[in-house]
Image (tube, rainbow, N blue to C red):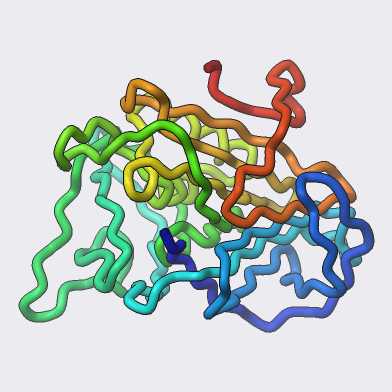
Length: 278
């Protein structure tokens, strides 16, 4: 299953990575950061690969998040900005299905990019969750890319063992896929630590479904200070989720390409690890 995220780059300063080790790290000669983040786009690649660089692993003290995309030829690569908003008390936030092909979304919920063209029907939500009072602005493609707090995301799919299907499909019991989880995090929080906790909590509460029903998902999530690796898969009930997150240690770099890379989890070490209770 191809990933669908193609990032749009901006002018950057050159920087060399000083130290690289741990978390299935692969060496690299040079990396190109923004003032705080590198959001790099690599098209026509052979694998969906995500990278995360801690502050002290970069020459200028930037954290970096990157994602290469092996999306298929019919993937919808349009970039959109969702503006910040305030919401009425008691309002609900629609949850939308995951669609790979063009058009992946039709409507106004994710910015002007996806407004309907003549003859196009609006994308229908598959469910709702309670809305929050205020949401941040953010860029998205399929997944969230970066919000106004400079919270950034990269993605890679991985194999998993439990199947769950989306609400609204035959036998569907789970509400949230990785795309909407990343959108919700970009809308609601500013730090990587808050983001992985929120995504995990929502998936446990409302259920997670992966691509093709049975795949797992990974995100690398970074803010100006910390970078986390986030793993998630459906649980045996198909109504919740199993997840874990590990902070990329200072001075280290992580790389993940379609395989889970967290090998040991110690939930008693809350500084380094977060996760579901089961």
